[in-house]
Length: 452
Image 1 (cartoon, rainbow, N blue to C red):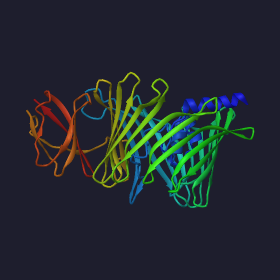
Image 2: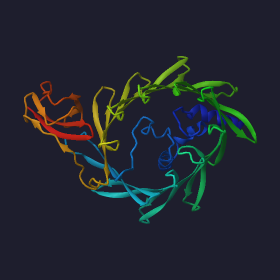
Image 3: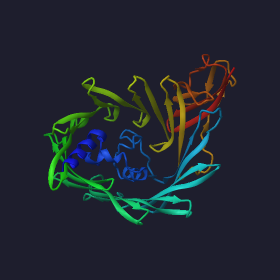
Image 4: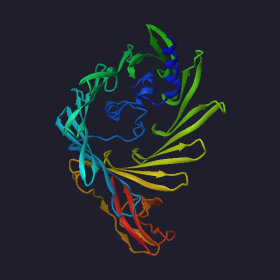
């Protein structure tokens, strides 16, 4: 008994994280970040906003896999932009999609090595007649057998006709030694007559030892969930393991504080997240904090800042990581769209502690009317006049656009808004070759400039 209570306290004091979860119960969040990435992808595809999927925050744009006559065919990712190449550098990974039936989709992931694409893993997603994902099974490629073998499986049981609520879900892992499925995690929800989640029972297998938890949800007079209490279930008895408090403004969470239970049975502050929103109720800034015993206060560990375009699509996401020595690093993701809400391109930049931005990788999205990801990606050519130039240039754009200029190392050297009646001033740039990208409504352009 004492060892079990100590294990609960240790786990929550070491791993508990607070984030804006839609479905995953707080008691399972500490363990989700340690799941295999294929399981995380399956859970994320079912709507769970997992801590391990930091790149998939609520404010980040999703990919519409079907939109009228369009469907997502494939994606391809390039990396290693630090070398002086004029076009995309080394292929890294690609994903291909096959739609076997209206309710069955297969996702195939490959990696690039020694000039060829090699299979990595694949997953099959099955939806019900309401379009809700109810099963995802992942397989990994076995080079020795030259075929796929089972890896993990997730089953979800929706709550009545709700598009998001689940009565329960189960996660299995394939045991390669016994050749059988082993249950890794399960979750069961209890709702009131207003379809509000009031209790949750979950279990996670940690190194062969099952841990069972119960989460209890409390709501205020406005119907907002303001408190979640977590209990460990040991030998039929309940022991407090932690809690989460949530504050709201206009039904939007503005502060989440997570507490863990000490060995003395007292609640101790562990982590905190604050939110600010745009005028159209989208996340604008998300700050994460950890409680410091040294300063007896909150220490900012991470900030996420979102920007949106004129049609309220996410145009960029900056994540700032604050280090203990006072330095910081940043990741910036820029999103480009086709006409509508379909993603066309993601560009990822990294800023080191010295403030230098480097283009890290690009990910292209291809749809049914586009070329395959196996072919060279294309963008609309951007004409620059005069080229070469000594300073002032005109771009072949007929509408306002956001422009970025990179040197041959892939480093961002200039950015801003460009209008058709403007001249772009490059006088401050050293002589050399530069690459320019422009993003206008629904279109992406790319070109080259020689400064001399």
